Length: 154
Image 1 (tube, helix red, strand yellow):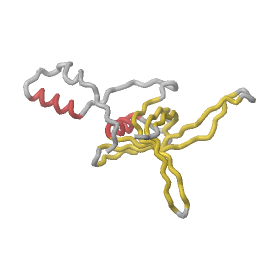
Image 2 (tube, rainbow, N blue to C red; image 1 turned 120 degrees about the horizontal axis):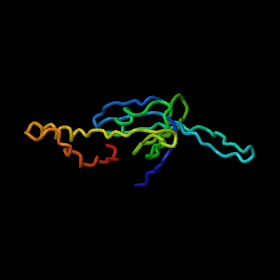
Image 3 (tube, rainbow, N blue to C red; image 1 turned 180 degrees about the vertical axis):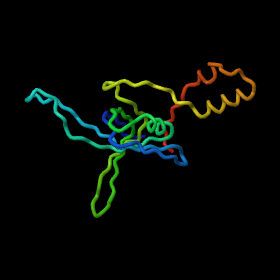
Image 4 (cartoon, helix red, strand yellow; image 1 turned 135 degrees about the vertical axis):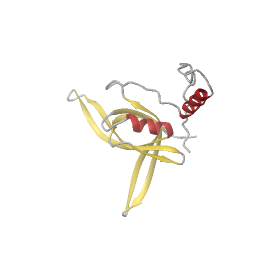
């Protein structure tokens, strides 16, 4: 597949809109990316133009973004670049979207505390084991199962 993969660093420009779909959760937000360049003549950093992208995320990434991200926070977003054109009001508009594969806070600008999101399957199986008479409080239940990575969009 010849997708154009990009990694962009910027700030969340709008609230994350989350909704459930038949294929799982979907989240969408606008992302502002501003370039900074060293100006040799003035000897200072100068801000370049700001580019805005609409970021789409699916399933667990969508739910985790909706629970973790607020307007103005610095993020790193990695995903597939999508450029689309639409006609409306007699004008042709170009939109640039990113289908996110991964996203996280930009730790060069602050700190974060990671919390692993519980997997729905692990919660169901743990409840079944408890109901079947397994010892409660067993720290090994579900601890060795790695979280699956699913990057395909359905």
